[in-house]
Image 1 (cartoon, one colour):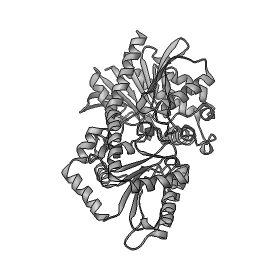
Image 2 (spheres, one colour):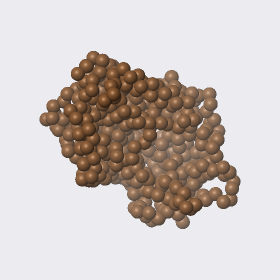
Image 3 (tube, helix red, strand yellow):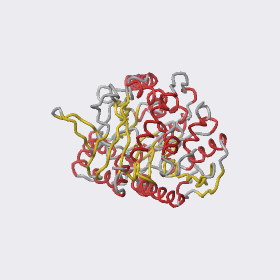
Length: 495
């Protein structure tokens, strides 16, 4: 059955597990990610489809199940699965996307690796996604493409199906022209994105950067600019903008530029945080700290996340403030990335060595300053630590948005706790009531964590109240509504 709404995303919309020798599909364990929100769009469609890839030893194997029909809480929809070999996945995702695109998107030019990129394979995989979307889409269907590893899909899809309405959402930062134009495939990428009806970014800065890149390469004009919401203008962050492009024109086509940040499932998180058993466990964690204070930091092992800078800051703070020895503990969750990627192995080793050095230098038999956790923590357990923590320390060097800080705020139904947040996280544009810090500055980092640890109760409650209002306003549900409105506007523009 043809679908009037098609989502194109590299991940499948479920967890595929083997039980008693039989393949079953489960709802994703994490409530936060965007997958549940994306699937909610199927509720407004006569029939929906999802295009993703699945690892296959032999893509030509006739037994490979390319089409799966799903019936879950979000309705009935089709999943079109593209069989990719390990070599294709490695080339398209681990090498091209992570070694070439990822460092440029996050403005780490020194980590950019052009040599191993196999551009023909990247094109081939993107063409396969576009073909699958074209097959699934009904006439005039809405097709929603997600993230930079599928940059070329809109252009290919427009060639195959000029009738469909295409929206693309960029989940990472989008850098300035000086940075993005390092990529030798820059024009091909931008031309593909300009085949869309809507191009979405988290914050106005990324939209402005995209416009700058597009105008550096092609004859693109601005049709409409709009002022930024006053609640999103904060001069204390490096990412603030006062106006943003709304409509641009290219080759007689009008394209909407959307600035709308992904949020978290606030209602779900609050429900879990208010569960009596969760609150009891959180209190037990606080009691175990005695008169000490708990800091939580949660992220992936990645050079963009600032893990080393954070640990080095803690070391300096403990050295300069002996009163904190035995009184502060950092729970540093740094989930290991793909072990096949050498750049991430070095980061993980550096974090482990730094944590070991600091614990060896300051720790005692009764107390260690750092609890380093290199595995994912179940979300319900994470909620307990969010509730128990005096401070959430979220200081990436660059981050498209960062949902961990929003999870922490949403979980604090007690209206307590302090958020220390990097000014280079997209979320800082919304969360100006956090203690905003510059992770490239040792002084800024050290002062921020000390301010958080010493903050009086009245100020904590005032700041957290303001943070919670913003997180509720810009929830993942609100983001979904904005994306739906963009589709509607695009349909009207096309007549």
